[in-house]
Image (cartoon, rainbow, N blue to C red; front, side, top):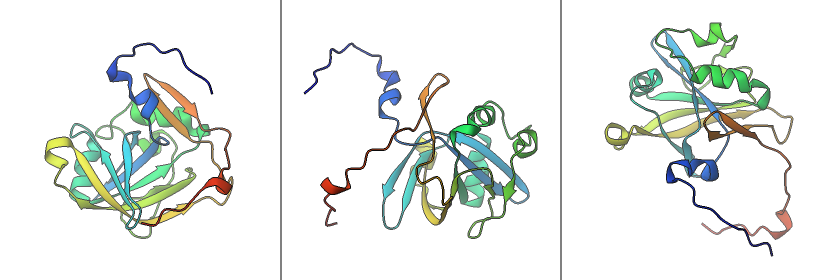
Length: 185
């Protein structure tokens, strides 16, 4: 078994090592106004019902759109959209129509008013179900009400943010199904 030589790392860099999943694009709509934001800080909180928690700063334009509409769509981009993902995060929807500016196609969702992004691998339509942590921590808790993913590729090349403009791209998969033991929950 390999033993690693270790060094101290500033604690504000822990996200480089704990980052949980792919960068997503969150679309929102309130009345006629739509927006999209880049997000890398979220967590799956429950399997059934499927709950997702995420921190969206109250300084972010999407915060108010989601708070007022009580819904959003979590879109999953692949690596070919990396520059667009960064560009979305580098501007505000208060003064920019990100869909037009970045050549993204909003498409009508089936369970929420917020659109999904046609160019993304998949999307998860969500409804806000809990706001107790919203005012103190800007933490939204959503229930997934609809999920659609592309049928191919089976394992998309998603982006994973490690901080300071550095991303990893998902790579080789490791199949350990023969060792997996389902949990009796």
